[in-house]
Amino acid sequence: MKISIDGLIIPLQPDSLDWEPPELIGHDGNSAPVMAPHWKCQLGFSRMTSVVHGMWYDAWDGILHDFMLPHPRTGELTTYSCYIESVSPRMNIVADCDPALVGLDITLYHILVV
Image (cartoon, rainbow, N blue to C red):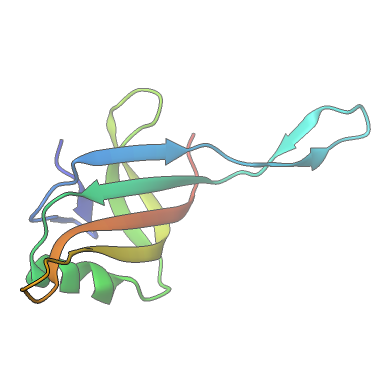
């Protein structure tokens, strides 16, 4: 699996990818559930470089990006236009050393899965 953003393969691939299905937003007149149309996707990286972290941080710009991700039901690589909701660094803090970037958690949102 090679995830890409805007046609460029990401140098470090995520160790985990978790899909969050649409949320329940209410019920219709017949009490049937009404679901939001969009999904979220969580990408987890257990290793990271400052260069790749900078790439993700720069892409966290409020603009739609095209991501090639595995489909949540079929696993087939599919292009989705979505936003980056958050870029959360994981830091390792050892008593006698400076904090070190050891991972990254990315949340993608507004993903329309068909």
